[in-house]
Image 1 (cartoon, rainbow, N blue to C red):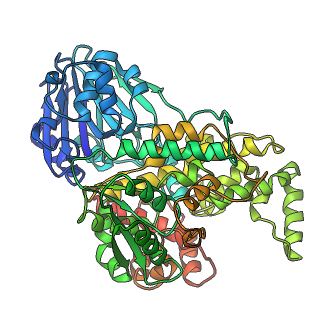
Image 2: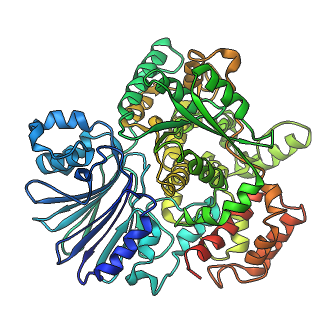
Image 3: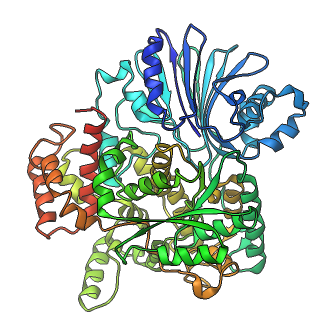
Length: 615
């Protein structure tokens, strides 16, 4: 895991200024810094977190043997030894035992598309073709690793961190928010790719190649999309569980590659204990890390400790408190160089900060809920699907009447469609609030497309397949952003085996039975964990990785929130309807509006703007 940066075009900035920009990502890669230029139209910077072959032989940017390719990569290619065997070069051909050198040779031998079709990993790649004078920006299948870019003054700038783009001299003189991206952020608490906060800046999308020609003409192509469902395996059949067991074991084997200490996060849920159980069978003594809370409503540490004792891991428990929040909140915002409004980032920051004192690589459980239908909302959507056969007005009247008489009918049925209901679930400021505090603003077409579509309301499978793909390219991207920034700020690599390419391929072949034969979210993973732990130990109640945000906003953070949102014109200046925004904030503190996450999203934007010298 590393930090990459580069610029491509006429009139490169001075080397010392470029190095200063590169140094902004030194926390992503504290072990080595590198630089390369052709002294004409490209310069690359690199900060390395050494995981495989920690010697200087693995340093980057790296040049191919034929002097035709230069590469900088942030990430890991887990099947690089398999690729190495397929290439067929003698061992003497290589100067290191790194995945970087192997895939560089693969690009040189096979070309870009064939290599990407073969590799399996988490990565963001900048690949420069010296002969053609063109550059490729490439992001992994699931979007685990970030890659931002901007175009200004006939000049391409790209980097692992967004501040390296917008602090570039060509950008920082005039930072104009993209109003669509800004509105997406206020609604969701993050900005989905391909957009970014400022005009003329973007994100490379998951599974995308961006080719920039020497004349700076840009071509985009998705080399990977989440596979179309095939229903090869029935979710509730034993052979499906056996195949999942076999596949997951292969994934863990592949991802255990490391020349530095490896550990794993361990919660009281399902995903991380399951991962730990597989790792534990393959290593001598596993180090695990658990974060707990003094608030019993959010604390999973007792269950996590039970898992640890059963597996005989060396578990390190850290109890999170408000004192941690006060001490680390400002530094925590430095980890997020783009606006980010998921308050659980405070906990991710804390767990990564403490885990890094024990190991350099950690396994995390992200992705299991998204690809195995793990969220309770999936069941809620399909149970209410028939409501959407009615006229919207009739739905609203009838559902309100039924609730009045004590019936449980979700408020989501009053929306336009299941798709709009899904967007509502992911929104922290709904459309009614947006219309008040941001008059005449609208969400981006990309966000609308993400939540667009129609389903056969009689076909549960079709609905579930749409929901899974939507979660993969929507909500999951917020989760991955949160953990990447928190972990890499502390020089910690987090691997996500549920998002291994082989797991994605397998999950796409499952015919779901949710709503048919069972009503158990994440059915397969629950069946699998019961086979690996005593049933009485397994905790199926989903608490989430959280803390009491409402309490913190109304006590220790209250003065600062009011100062930033009410007492002054919030950033971006002259954008919010101040009167409506003040009403919203005061209604929250008066107890009339019970949505602390909404306030956190607004507060986080102001903290970001001050932290990165935007205002």
